[in-house]
View: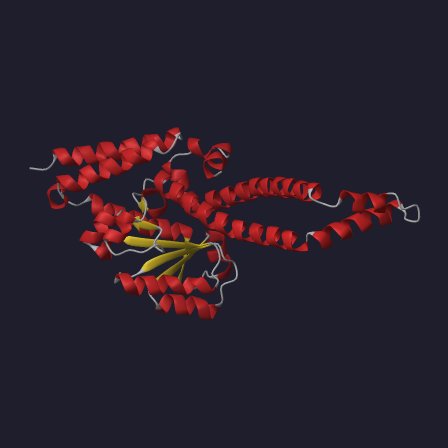
Length: 300
């Protein structure tokens, strides 16, 4: 769904400057497109489930209501709906609960993948646990709450303080507290927490900041509510911070990182090429691979 929304919105035709300079516009357009599509799918799914329940209804019971001459057409419909909900109240409750859980799970995964595309199309190197799997992250002591390592887990292993760890929560419910716990466990100096939550209390912001977690919100939220609060980043300033990290690593001598480092990078981006059909992403991955291959030739 994220891939299709990306293509439908024409983002594959945009260059690096668009994504880097308009991250909030991109994220909001993707969110709106995905939510619209998901609601249609959910509506269709619920209709199909209702048909299944009707098929398992006591048809004679419903026909009895329909044939009752004492009832008006409106009251007949009311009677059928009432009897239907009485017979399947637990089923309907379970269906609603399932829809709620699916929405939350979907929203988190969509947000992560949309941000991944934002980073890649902004030419920001990153390792994404959702795509590469958690083995690479676990090997350097990072848990499941770290969604991205920038520029990657290899760099994190070499110089933690010159990398960025990113976690994402569409809303900051009670589970946001897991992020600083993860930070303390890994021994990392800080972490970025991206969120779309539009109702973050001042106390929560201060608590998050005191745990060395940098809160990142859409630029529209930053400008409207947190313009004078340096404890909250807008997406644009967050992207600039990441760009500085990438520039730092690009200045590293090839001999310092070594041939094995670059070969591993090439392997990862070749793996990503195999997992996408979006030509603009394939082009970027190949650009990265060419860069790593050039670095290998610089090694004495």
